[in-house]
Image (cartoon, rainbow, N blue to C red; front, side, top):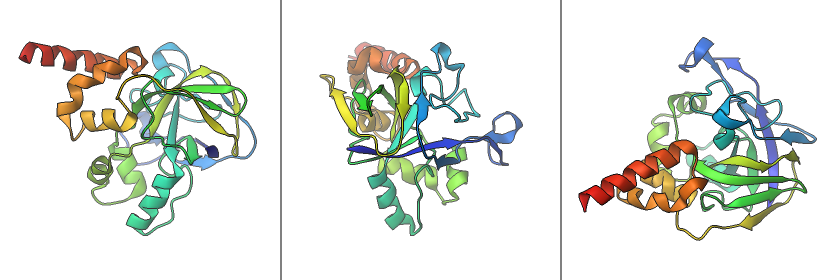
Length: 224
């Protein structure tokens, strides 16, 4: 299991985003050499967890609970076949493109060590948006990505440091519950019957997802 690519993006102006000034940071490109990784801080004021990476929509991206976004090279390869086009690392807006890692099967609260220093903890799946769809230019992209249910994972930074392409990825901890990144994604989108079970992931969920999980659990209890 390894880190195939580290990708960062600069703000660029586009016509298809609702962010202030029409900026987006989704255009991530691989970079050579080490990249510093640290938590953006409580409340998400700091944007991305990767030095030099831009978050143009802080309401929906970045912050402590979505500091780093990872996507599997294997899933990019699969989409290459489906779409009939080349997909470079970073094209889905991911900061980390992995190889040999079950990103979507990561449990909420699962901890990864990347290289010698950085430790990350899985918090949430990526939910597709209009900017993502327009960036790729694929018809019906949000629906297709949602039905595929392999969204990639957001992470918080537990231990800062530096990462670079080629670093090994090691799973340090897997919690004792069933809520994977893909499970939570399906609960949010195509499988609402899963929602009462999301609360099992507890405080490892992002703040937004935890608030949502508490409401789902309360609604299920009231319905019984």
